[in-house]
Length: 256
Image (cartoon, rainbow, N blue to C red):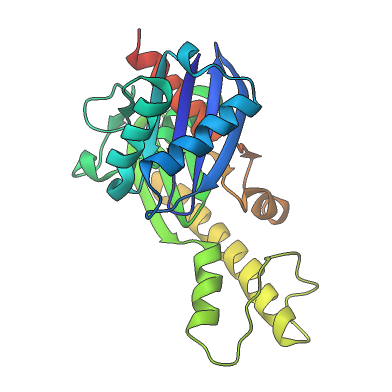
């Protein structure tokens, strides 16, 4: 049994694998002010509710894009499971040849998604993660991580629009816009975000595949992935558990 942890800017997702099966998972808010004991208490309660014996956990694999809480979460894992966590980063066996000018700059979440994407969907592959930031990762037919793009995510863009304007209201959910031409301020914002991001995504896919010169499989993940796929036939599949799958593969490759 092993634990996988995805530390994102907005939330922390945890899963427990028994063999190759994800037996349970949960999320908690990423809170930079929370103490080790507070995190540990919540995780212990979740393990108890899901009948997970912490002493049966053989290891922990973590990917993080919030380095300021990495040390804290490492202590939390030690306190909860009596094991030292392994973080996705330099020295970890990924099976990918990263062609970035500085491979250390590639985010752990992007590497993890790429590892899972290639293993489960093959290459060439374009992975789009609709998270706090929207990221694009391109892996060529030789399974080389070529690069990608990083854009402001949908949710933070919506929050920024409300925060930086005096009269525009907060729109809490993206939802389905009734039409491209909105008939009210709320409808106009919903239309702008839905079809604006759909058009942005469609444009990025087209430009990346043209530049790559390959017919790649396009895979999406993240909170808004299914909504984007409903509007874009160019997205071939959605995988909500892509990061967990990547962490599981990385754990296996680095603990054998």
